[in-house]
Amino acid sequence: MKIRNLIDFNDMSLEEWDELKQLAFRIKRSPHEFRDTCRGKIMATLFYEPSTRTQMSFQTAMMRLGGKVIGFSDPNASSVSKGETLRDTVKIVTGYSDILVIRNPIEGAAYASALYSHVPVINAGDGGHLHPTQTLTDLMTITELKGKTEGLTIGCCGDLLNGRTVHSLLRALVRFKNNRFVLISTPELRLPDYVLSELTRNGNSFVEVKTLEECIGDLDILYMTRIQRERFRTPEEYAKQAGVYRLTAEKMKLAKPDMAVLHPLPKVDEIDYEVDDDPRTMYFEQAENGMFIRMALIARLSAAERTGRAPVYPLAEGPFCKNPRCISNHEKYLPRLTKIVDGEERCCYCDQKI
Ligand code: NCD
Image 1 (cartoon, protein in one colour):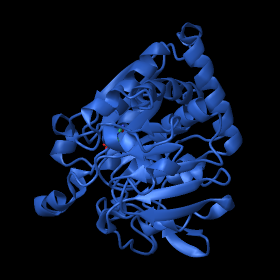
Image 2 (cartoon, rainbow, N blue to C red):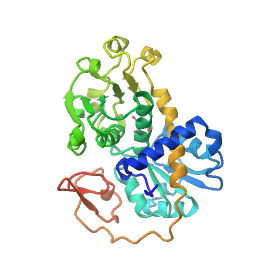
Image 3 (cartoon, rainbow, N blue to C red):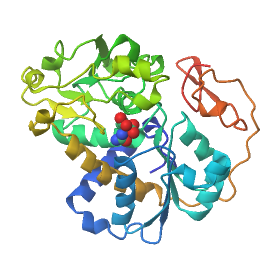
């Protein structure tokens, strides 16, 4: 694999994705063949935000490859609570390990970490921005169920504004051809512009609707998400959105017999308990695939050589990012890096327009 880090699915070419996916299917078929692939390697997991699946699937993935794991899941129990910068934590921890997995509530934190790392960095979720390894999981599951990731009608329902899994998945799916995206949300929780503006590439198209009932019968895949309570400014704003969408057995009767229901999990109240027993729900299988695809990713990325000292960047130079949730506005020493996408200047950390 040519890429060194996985910060965004789009860091990867489609050929690299294809190779990774084939490897994940091989691992799933015969995991014992890979039990020594990472023997002697150490993975560090820095989880600044709660996680069950992502953290445990990364940890078990490394253990099943024969490697070991260090890290924290409660930053209050580390030097972060003493005020250590992200840059210092990354420099220290990557001095000890062969691969770094990071989850952080601030957008662009994984990109920032990779600037200062001696070893490959994997983004396990950066605030409401991206979650590329969930995308790998989702694409693997869609391929397994439908045999392809193009020409599908895919509904995404719930908190499209704050749901990083949806942002990552849609930005990946537009790289394949002729998908039709049905975006099901309230006007307050619409998809952010930086994702919306990409959805018509490669013959893809989208519609925005308000209810599940009006579109469920057309869908090949329904990707449900939870309302992201922790991203709301006030409990009142959350309360207005909570419980708006609910997938019930009645609504499932309107869906195609082979529609698949996916969910990155955890689910709260957006799927009725009885729907869990419908054979079209695939989220538990999806979560298991997450371990196999992460095994493939760790196996490939941890094969890279360690670099010596991380490069030196000019301190805090460049145009300010207007996004208050962007890491460049929190860790003040970071260089303010931008890139041009479709003729527009965007922040390298959080992708928002400058
Ligand atoms: C998701 C996340 O953390 O973004 N969970 C996960 O990693 N599977 C989805 C969520 O928290 O709603």
